[in-house]
Image (cartoon, rainbow, N blue to C red):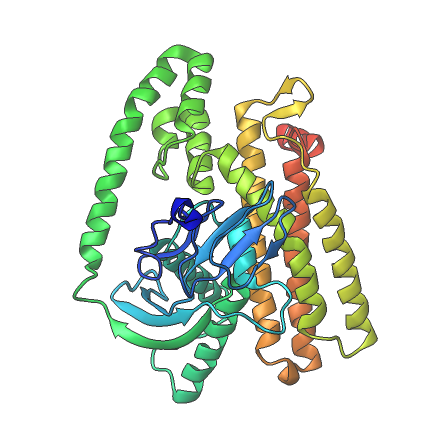
Length: 397
């Protein structure tokens, strides 16, 4: 009889899970949909999977997602200049039995904020593939042979696994000309830029009439709205810098900065483990280079957890808006370097037995460049002001 009065476990809205939604946040006491694993992120950023449970029980500070392993099918564009040519890619989220922490769990912990839609994940896959093709990490010739296509498929699978924890089941070329009209896309983009320009015109007039104070106010107000690349010609130098910063951040600077710092804090230790295990050096020189890179990444990992607040130059001293935007730009660039580092690890793991000494040396040289960029951007994010020596030389020039 007591069973009749027990409260049923609340259900999450899982109707779209596995269709348009990949992962959904979980609340304590929610019933777990069958066949959907749970990822729990504790207060320190650690991830775990509790296994097969019927109801989720949370601890203090825990965040949790439930996800559907797939498979999913999306159309992605390898080249932005050719929107009619796409790749119909089928992928799934599979657990690696040899890994203590799954890569997809780290992706949820460091980058997801609430619901993860399939469209948003597909856009991230597309951006990652386009960046790797543009930088030469992958090759997709116009008339690829069977060997070239297999090499691309293998590289794509390794890239998406290292970056997102996804396994590519199938990938075939597809003609998207019936659904993608390049001319219409360009016309819509031009109309959007014209509308943004018209919206910025009143701010430009206010900035020109009100002097330096009004210009600073307009720059601060417009920093949170997207603007075209030529906005600086309309709203003045200050407005142009703020608009460019907003375009580069893609969101409010405070939120974008917090997300980038979270990525640095959570992903740098995993990058260190990946670099240590990806390709073992086959000579003393490369071994010393690897150890030096690991030490530098270790310093960056410690510093990522002790970054100053975005809006404070010192305790009780507010930081001007232009310096906040500069700090946010540095954190966003550091996050972009993380993407390059994951792609580099994918290239190292693609064919480790076929990496000759000179090829491995070239990959470690690329790692030196990425780590140097991380160091420069983390140092820029930590500074309250621009480099005084650099600014003084620019002023003298």
